[in-house]
Length: 329
Image (cartoon, rainbow, N blue to C red):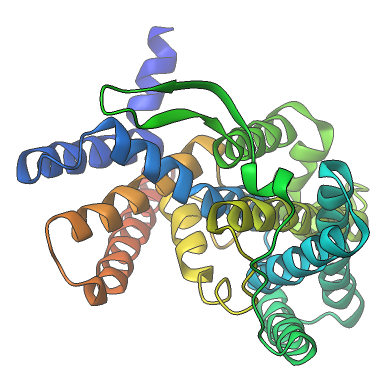
């Protein structure tokens, strides 16, 4: 136990946790609106969409790839699933099945293009992002869907309670899906053979191939998993917004990538944890929420997000360099 705590104290996650707590303490002093149950509940609910996508992107980064197309995948899955739910009377299972199936199909297409054509994953996914988004806007004309099925609009509210001001709280659809996404990704990466193979693939792709790992199959799985999470996230966002908007999700790729990179995942593959990603998401949420609460213009949000990413990545690189020098010495 003591050794585990000692190892954790020297980890990226421990440094990130300290930054989140310090930033939270500063914001609590600066504004009384930050440390309230309502604000923290709203933060968790509104950032569930990014968190679910971050769980999927973590697996892709650990495998040594990258996916930029997930917001377009989510937009297509969301529109197709909920327009079908309205037209054909689908229930929860049918709507989720269609959204997830659409996401997986888009992910498998990315993996096939990357592995078959031997093209960089960032090039392929930037291309598919634009193709999927362009087709969606052309087919739908950019029209929103406001009339959603009643059961979907109501969502779920488990363990519901109200505070002294009669404001309701509970385990809603967004928080439930976020917890399930992080739990499933943790099990995948830490308790399965495929998870260990994904780390090995990201650490050294050539060595993984020589050891007999099915590299093409792992790539299909990794990008399919990203599509799976994009399908789930799309419905979480639609239920929260109470509408389907084909043009609002694309453009949020940087926030998702920021959360995963802040959590310590390496863009070179082989490194990354679910705990780090959750803390990276928390830092991003607290930072953006804090800027709004203290009255700083939203135009500065991207500036600070970029600055924090740069500092975090530089810190990680310096730490790895020091460890390498120590190992040589």
